Image 1 (spheres, rainbow, N blue to C red):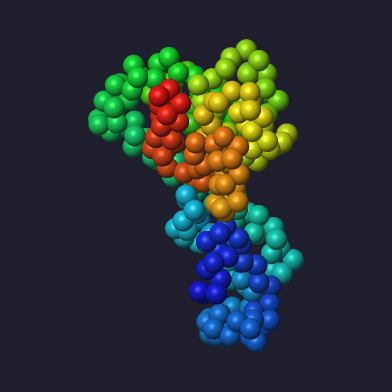
Image 2 (tube, rainbow, N blue to C red):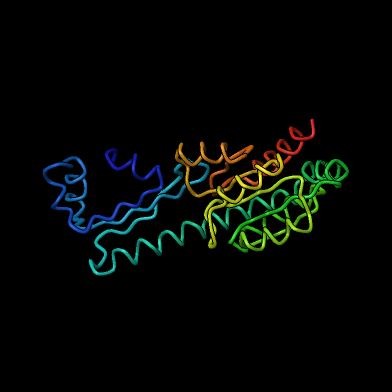
Length: 231
């Protein structure tokens, strides 16, 4: 499967409705699939922080349902990510070392405000809980319009923003915000390509985290962004 690896590791799905079409140009893959009596196949990657940790797949799916199955796999991959993130949160809460660290950080960050912008309510609440434990005052917005309204009343010490939002680009929004004030920004994205990372940094980003990210990476990115801006 090596010829497909590059496509999968970059977040792409493999949808092959006719394995026979691989016979000429992808003979290695063709021989493997043919030996297992596989006539069509779908593969979707399970990724975190730009790394592929596993695959979701189906062999010989009905041809008319190929695209629908691929969409279902994307949803399942995100669901698995959510479960893993929730497990990490539980472990964090139950860890005595983490609790002690959180108690110390409450006093360190209690005068700092962070604005979270994400159209996923689940991720928004998860990030809110994990950062609030460190003493930050948290403001939440599920759209850029709502974020703009929040900024009319409060100027946060840092912004954590998704890049792809239903009412616009988080990159464009934060770029304009950064032109008015050098506020530290941490971008969250499902894309791990170099262009996205470069654009994020040029838009004022202190860090660009690829979903699904580790919760501790988010904590460290926010702390570093605020500390660097204060120094």
